[in-house]
Image (cartoon, rainbow, N blue to C red; front, side, top):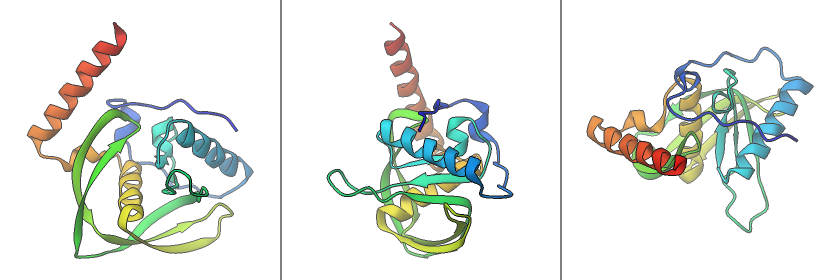
Length: 171
């Protein structure tokens, strides 16, 4: 497995709508394995293909807590087919917006249809933290970042902190 390069805000690929995958073959499976490796190395719980410079509708997620057995999920061409009316606020972060976090309100449960690692059609009812992770990562496929769900003022404050962090890290 190979660790892939992570693209950070404001790279233009993060704002593009990703293309559908036509077939889940060995090349796509290898790419998903590399995405998963990258996510684990970076201590993330989810990663979308655009975050590693590939504009394809592919996501990997693993919400297993530290000490638990890894439980990777692979989503190809995922689409949310149902959202609960009930919402939940959860603090989110993103590997493409390092060391920044903010509270985002999202539906508490979602049902997602997708192709799995072997290209088989699946459906998953995601609740709790998994629902947050699924929505966060699927947003990436449509060029949406979690900061796009914040008020203009909160987004500007967060981006100022990110800018300061980058300046500090360069020194």
